[in-house]
Amino acid sequence: QVQLVESGGDLVQPGGSLRLSCAASGFPFRNYDMTWYRQAPGKERELVASIYSGGRTNYLETVKDRFTISRDDTKNTVLLQMNSLNSDDTGVYYCNAKHTFAAAIDYWGQGTQVTVSS
Image 1: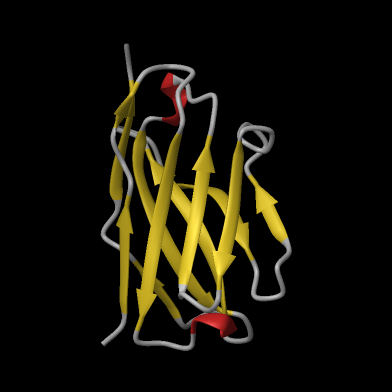
Image 2: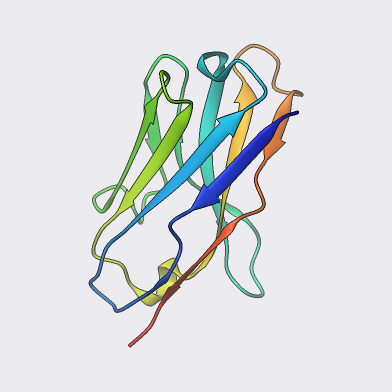
């Protein structure tokens, strides 16, 4: 059974940090590109950061100097370290896995809430 389980979301003050984790199971993790998306209230879901099966990364422009995505293929885990958070970072963060060579094969987690507020 395929599972993506996100954790680490919380309420944090502006300027604070959080680390999100996505634990994957039920599929060959190392063959998948991993992406964090987020969706703010009333807005469309947007890509935040990706890490491909070969290790290359890609970031949303507004987070590239503050967020770091990483993966551990031995633990089937992808992390998102988020620093200098601001209110625009508020939203539900989702983990996505997409097969490197077959994009139609992709999986989603249930999401974890990140709220940045004083």
